[in-house]
Length: 383
Image 1: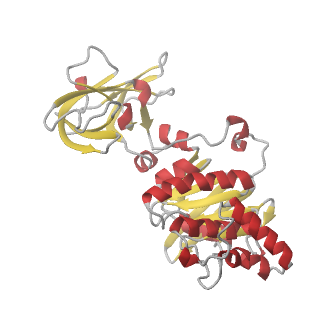
Image 2: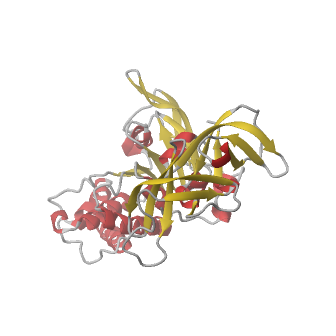
Image 3: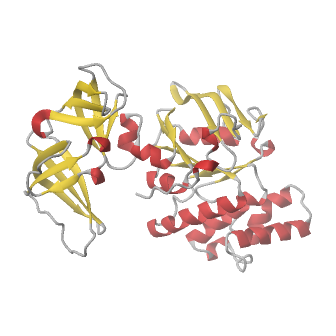
């Protein structure tokens, strides 16, 4: 999974206590009948961020986006953009534009007319509209296609026209609702980087809704993971992947192995927890955790499949060892995924990268394998 660090540490304003949020959501609640679509949500987004709201269906991410746009009014709470309370303002009076999943292009208008539509509605002079439209066409690398109709464009080109139209009015905040959902996988992957490059050039703050974790990881400076109307964790893509704060986040972001157990003790000098776990050889799992937990505390321990090493014979020494038989194999070209069942019945997922050319997975069904990983690769989850 792609996990680029898009912003250098010096440009991470969320780490600066003195930085002022560009978009502030304070205690926003929205209900539909008895369902809390947004449940007391507070969130800060900083100027120039490409921020993602990530979650499954019904998590509340689209409702929150519509509240930002002004299409929905919250039951309580408020929304501020650049220090101005816009909670009661209608959409057309907010410094916000929205790019819809369907792109919503006018089929009877040319590309240039689509891009300039909002500017014309605002009463901008014709000459200024032509100049701005040409700037937008060059921004999205379509300078010669202004006279075409939407049905003469590819899916990726229509997506770029929709983006150009959304940016033409120079909004303070651009909202994107599943912006790449209508594209095929190959085009979607290429367009992810195009969108990021455009956002960095114009400097507009982007807030995107997506259910696609890889899309969010690739494009965003930070991600808010949502579940059941609440924000579960807000962090950078790398921190979300490596240090999930809850079991839900660990399972939602990427592949994961979860081991259940109870705390046996804590080595304060090494910062290592010892956890009783039947899935491992010797019945003990070791995990890096700086803070002690009371003996007997029930915990889940998360280990990413790519952090597990595979051995065909019992290793001489390792922090954690699990042995079992291969039950399932998935060959994905660049990697193979193995599901190894231990004697206790636990299933451990292992990912092996194909460094050398091979048309077959390295191991076969029924093979006995020993799996090891260091204590530093394990994340202890108490929530």
